[in-house]
Image 1: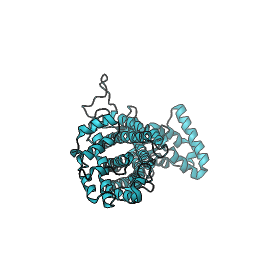
Image 2: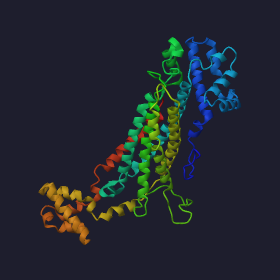
Image 3: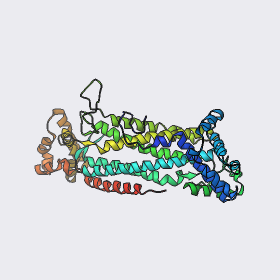
Image 4: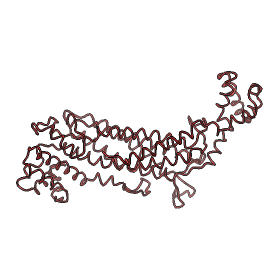
Length: 456
């Protein structure tokens, strides 16, 4: 799957995530960690002062022979050793013997991967900022667009479409809060040697980790054990929840696109083809892509949890599971973000169909309003019983529910026809739908601006 296309083949602007997760990109991130380690060790006089900068200056993939690295990779089967060997080859005789001094593979690899994740994280935050702007406009634009609210798949009470969008914003904003709040725990430096005791760094252990952390822009770990993978897991699970919400939104649009409802439509042009055999088809293929990608993201939760069950002080298989889950999730979520932005930006709102569907219930959708007003005179339970009986009669005999209301002697005793006409007007029974739409539009816009300014 190309980074600039959805599974259905629709092209989106590339977010570069797959390139960031390429083998050579990861190698460079590992070299960046090696450079920080060498410089920090020189500053602490663990190795000769001039040596650290010499090593660091060679920690550039462009200075290394990739053919040698790939050759040694085939020979050793070790993901980092060939890189260290090649780095040593290009260093002078005074510095080559201090390359990778006291570090272990996981120190380099995990911290390098965190550096890449941080770059991907910034891409996600930027995309989420743009998404919030789209939702902010949509919520405000549709704040008064009347439609049927549904529970259990049935008409419940009238709402506005802006209210529905406001609910989406509220849920998404909570996910973003969780992700932002987790940054100090996720973007941390774990640098404690082979088992996390920092024995290979002698008396400089804690100082070395702190210096490396500062150079990499990460938080130092309290105990630098390589057995901890919960920070990667926390990031995964926060992203999975966000992906799940996007899947829910796409599912809602998918359902409201059905011919029998036809209240929404994802962006479809005259060039789009829904079926190879049925010319009339206007299929919600992008929403289906999102629903699928959302499910694929959720499928990575079990392996994420399994990766945390690390054996003793560290084990290769758990890091492989963690890395696989993280990389796959970043790629899939990148596609998902591009797709959901595209759909929501070009979403078609069919106001006439919304009003038409609202009338299907022939006034019964606001029966609660009548019941509560009548209840002020005869009690809520008795009012519920009377209204429920009339609704059953209306359905059984296929007669007007409103007509029955106006003719019912018990109701006539307390409510006039004008009262009933006002009570059954769905526009007057949307509660705070419009207000919530306006409020969440502002919330989305403010959060969008905040994400644009994010630095960590």
